[in-house]
Length: 319
Ligand code: SF4
Image (cartoon, rainbow, N blue to C red; front, side, top):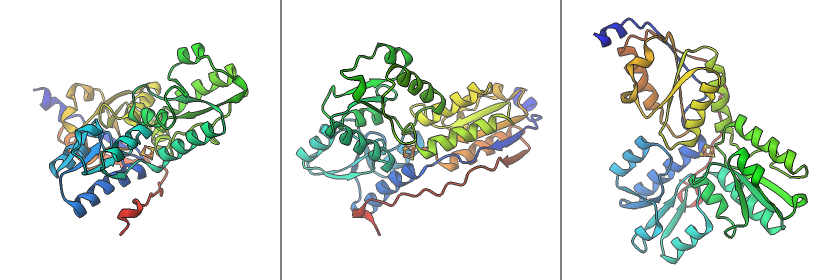
């Protein structure tokens, strides 16, 4: 009966642009697939290659083994570092274990790693803004010896932060933060430490994170519900959901069409869809098919920025 009522939903589906895969995710998955082609399975990946359940399951089915610890990989085998990057100690452990290493760290994360190493070399005291325990944060903090970088996530962290020399401070950020939240944290840092130096663009938030958040802000103006396709552990997907909610729109993060709850759709006439940077476009297509089954009648895209960023594969795999 409930399903029958929903047949008369007559909602419009509105897609955000850009959405879905970024250049770093595309490159990381291509690296794994290319190594599988060349070397066959099993190959090992430290951490999920990107934070998406479907991508991970698909690669597992092809013989990729995902591990959280390097010591779980048999000596001499192939390991790929995920797009989030790893600490220097993980790299050292892999070399000690004589693993053949391929690095799928997103070049934009590597850029932050290099900056942390440079700042440390010239004797600057460093603060990192990010989400506690996120693998990218662990990798970036781990570019220098333990305890060298201060870590902040909240206003409370900034307020209680004690540094050695406020005149010699620099900060870096995680690449997938909320633009609005990070601006507030940076503002507070600058208030507390007026001479702190930051990245050129005032944060290390990447182009893909920024573009997808801005597209959701635009989408919010035309929708009464926004479905964000992405996995629960995907930082940038969670941020997209928050952006929609901050714009006053009910929003849900779903892995795929099976997680659509019909009750969300009852009063929705304009359903927005976006996808996190690690969510494949096929999931968007499947969600559209499901919404049409439930009575949605049309699909349109709000034209947005066309992304042209492309990262070449690592040298060893160049065709
Ligand atoms: S979200 Fe940004 S930093 Fe992360 S993989 Fe994509 S481009 Fe790289």
